[in-house]
Length: 220
Ligand code: DX5
Ligand code: ZN
Image 1 (spheres, rainbow, N blue to C red):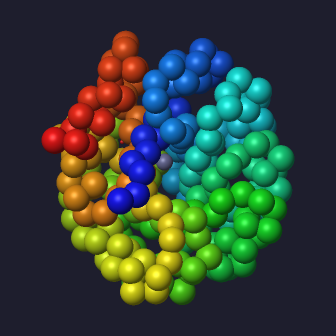
Image 2 (cartoon, helix red, strand yellow):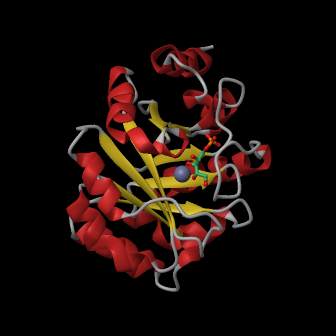
């Protein structure tokens, strides 16, 4: 059984107070901080870049799980490594050279993740699965927090579990988008073990008990 990890998404936090928001996350038992990087091109929204991640790094020792929604993310591999990112997850749809981009992430010492949009089939992941430490299956269309979970994406989680078994590989499977105490169990059931949650966690004043409610839902 893989360890279940909770990844609070800082996209739903107060951007004027990253330092104190990171402290709030550290008070929970969440394993990761999920950091969404958006360029206004791959997705309509713009969020923050490597310099902001570098500033956050000074305030936290948690694992930084960076999700790049950026065209040609290979351009930013060195910048994110230097900023202190631990995991760099890039979209299959964001570059013509996904294999080389993943190799580049690993070459600089970060963990490499691959992510697919709801409209991309799991089959497209097969050629690069041996390169990755994490597969992220989007359960909303990327770009914004607070959207409704798309349950049809869970069959792709199951497909990736099958690939992992078939090829004898070792990577985590993460889900992102619309994850809350009503949807997390189905994600786990399908085979995911890393759970990103933004609006569900940050809408509460008490982040500790909100993270705990996800663990409870996982164990029910
Ligand atoms: C969406 C981002 C998510 C977002 C999730 O493009 O990748 O990480 O923060 O937010 P919720 O949990 O509110 O769906
Ligand atoms: Zn994300």
